[in-house]
Every structure is written in C-alpha cells, then in structure tokens.
Image (cartoon, rainbow, N blue to C red):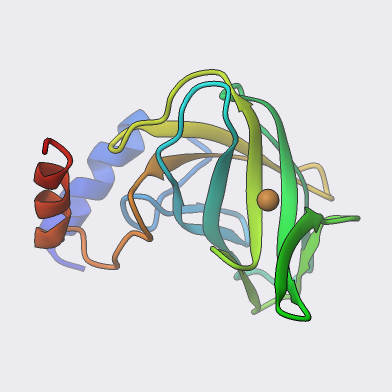
Amino acid sequence: MNRFALTALTALAITAPAFVSPAWAGDYRVGGIEVRRPWTRPAQAGMSGVGYFTLANVGKAPVKLVRVESPAAQSVTLHQTRDQGGVSSMRPVEGGVAIAPGAKVAFAPGGYHLMLMGLTQAQAVGGKVPLTLVFADGRRVKIELSVENGPPKAEAADPMAGMAGMHDHH
Ligand SMILES: [Cu+2]
C-alpha cells in the first residue's frame, strides 16, 4: 500500500465509528463481513429508494443479513427482482440473505436490492444515506450509501462523472 492510501485511511478512521475499518473509501469491514461499494440512486422525498452493494463473507462462519434499518426511510425491505416468463417482478426476501464463508452476494439492479420505502428526505447525487445492516448473530454494521447516477467505478476518479453532472444543468 502506498503512502497516500495510508494517509487517506487514517483520515477516514477519524470520522468513522471505531468498530468500522474501511478497506478503502466507501468500503466497510466488520469482523468477517465486508460491504463493498454501497450506493443508491437520486430520489425524491416520500418516494422509494434503492440500496446496492456487494456483501462478502471473508470470515470462517456463515453470516446472514436479516434486516436493514435506516433513519432515512419509513421502512427498509430486502427485495429480489426475478425474471419469470419474461416478466420482471420484485418481491420481499423471506428469512434473510445467507452468505457462506468465502462467498459474496451482489445487491445490484436486476437481483437482490434494498427498498427504502417512504424516504424522509430527497437523495441528491453526492449525498449519503445512512443504513444499519443487522445480521442473524445480532451484529449491526453501520454503512452509508453514496448517492450516484449509476454503479460506482472501481477507480475513484471517473472523468465521465463530471460530464454527466454538467449535463444536468441543461
Ligand atoms: Cu424492490
């Protein structure tokens, strides 16, 4: 790891809760659980929002995401979009989402996702939406979704992101 990355991590460690150690900006790791690239889309207050990220089990025991809480919405539900006979529909996930040791599950458009019902305020690009992931063993992991127009890139700097932002003013 280079010096710049170390400095950035140190700065993050000061603002993040002590029990969360980000692997990089936007990632979270608590025990054997990693939450990678959490993001959501812009939305208006009172409407429904979404939540996307990759959940990785880097520990030795199974984990299961059972519930998500957020002060930013009246309720948060685990959903899954399914394609049945060419018709796409989404439904609540019963019993949570289990992840075996060494496995990961993508919450992404077209599959698992979070539904944030009844947003308490508008979500604008560049903003953050706080969530708490609750696991079957009682562990609670606090994360923030960053509000993006699309899936965040692996690279921090995306020149096209700035172009898209300028376009919004037309
Ligand atoms: Cu949904």
